[in-house]
Image (cartoon, rainbow, N blue to C red; front, side, top):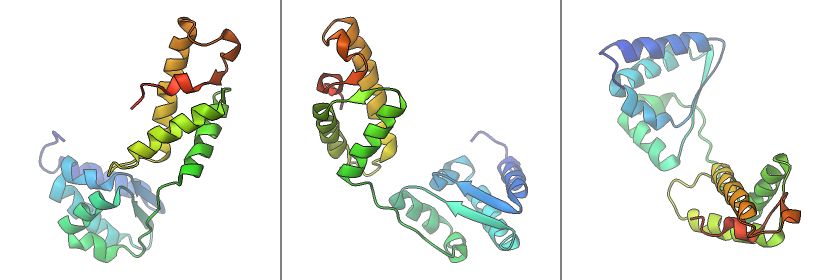
Length: 173
């Protein structure tokens, strides 16, 4: 955004040339509409045709927003060979992800804390833009901040300094 006419197209073309012989992965691809609109999308559509044998184009994002991109320029959809929809993680998978992320930070997580975190994640799941593992990471970061605070005010025992507790997840929405 804020680029002069033609500048978005030039930058897009540079990225496309750099991807030759490889993959161009565009996460949150619908954001292309706001950073250059028709100009950027038209450049990509042309490149998808011109470089169909030398670049793999991957567009990723929330399905409801991806539909907006596909509706914006039918040329994109007609050039996409495969479409894969990934389901959200299940409640059990999110719990496992939380445990793995917690352990990667050299912390443990109490069973009651996992259950509290799961309640929070299930409430967030109702959002159209539920972020799966990103939601877990954000929740964990907030819980760790709370944990440090809870330790500092002696709300939790110093013996639990490496263990996230239910109290660490309270107040997180």
